[in-house]
Length: 265
Length: 336
Ligand SMILES: Nc1ncnc2c1ncn2[C@@H]1O[C@H](COP(=O)(O)OP(=O)(O)OP(=O)(O)O)[C@@H](O)[C@H]1O
Ligand SMILES: [Mg+2]
Image (tube, rainbow over all chains, first blue to last red; front, side):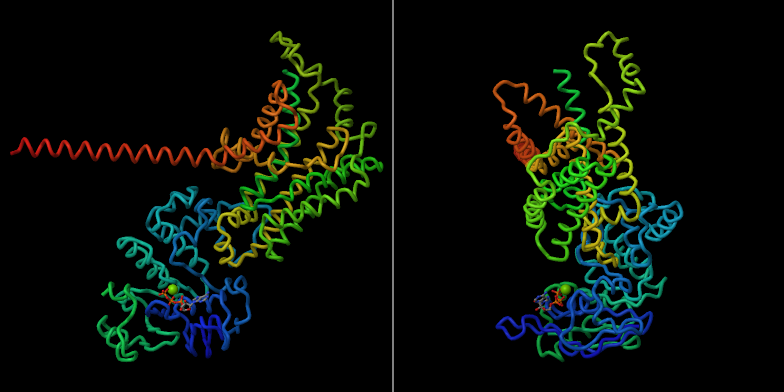
């Protein structure tokens, strides 16, 4: 489903600011795989996701999605295959538009826009059914402006919008980090449900090791642009947070540098 | 006095189409588009030249609007493909259009007094149908016949045209494409992330905006009976003032209400204009200053009010906290 071949990325090459963000990354995900990525600040996690989404081009290497070499596809074209939720709840939705209008935008991945018709009864009914699965009552507020929703509600909507058109790949970059703990729980639960229901191939970045262990069937740990540790489904079963911390120290000879990672036990 | 207000309604309705165009660029697309000063004249220039050349006024008017569409599309392309910042793209287009407009017109001023225009056509039909005699009846009943306008044809015909434009715009903005256009102005990167060519929407939106502006220009030159290459100076600010006045006085969240508010805003602006001209110490040329002041106050006042309100609230809460502490102190004392 997803294949990364020898990806390299360096920012500001040949200057004093040179920064090697990705260093020879090669990985493969099968359909339905759900990988969580952890790593210290600046490890290259977001850069990797940007590489998958086409926001950034690799210096070397190529990206395959669903059997197609998409390395040279522009972001817009790749977006047909990719659903994405960002850390900032404000990024994934249009605040001045209503819930149903936002949902309509997300249909753009699968169909062209009509110049002659608006949101039909049938589509509205579909939207309502999808919104119902979130179980936070958004289905009764189709005509509310999204800007009036709370951060958690907005993020839940972003998540639904990124998934309900069944993308080939779902990218989640710390999509719970800006929320308070109870809302984080809600979003994690929804993530689990939505991914499971549609068997989405998912890549999720998180700073919370427990989340990383609990969710998904695979785990990558990144540091300085490389994947320094990985666990498959079996190994992940009895992985614990101390295991991960030890693993990091063993490979790097230093402690995990992310404050956040330490805070999250 | 009263007749000046009728005049304000007439021209307010015609300029309302321009204000709707400005609403699309400024509010919907969040694109401060200065092309307007040029494309307004372009619409008038194309139309007047065609009318003098013997074209049907209807064809000439539509051609004027089409010229505006092209101008807007070019501004859109300068921004989206050329990566030029919106303000600069608009200014460049405005300057370029000044020369182009002069080329189209061949001279700075084209009189059309003896030509057949849209308004002379409507006027003729109107007289044939004797509609003024019908519309004057209610005024007679009320005994205010002397306050009736000399003719209703401009107001009625423009109302029909403006409301048609409004209806079409309302319809379009609620189609899937229209929703996408609005969302692009609201959160472009999000719309893009759903595999939408936002550059296309911005470019076409700018085209639509300037088509309306040029249509308004095409109507104004026929209404005035002449075209002038300087007709568009400050037009963008007039459009913006109309949009802001409309929003403040009549605005609501819904699209249909917003477009109506913009139209009413344009009429109110023209009424203010007409009144200002009646004040002895003001000259017609002061109107640009007054317009700028309206826009400035509309931009600054809400912020200032918000801030002073927040300040008052803060002081209040501090006082409350102070009182609370004192009460607490008293309680402690009495508990001893
Ligand atoms: N657009 C960019 N231009 C220049 N340098 C960048 C850019 N994006 C990332 N970098 C650099 O690349 C490195 C990896 O950054 P990245 O954002 O991928 O880290 P991350 O693992 O997501 O970190 P965090 O946990 O803080 O989000 C960092 O050193 C960063 O400064
Ligand atoms: Mg990151």
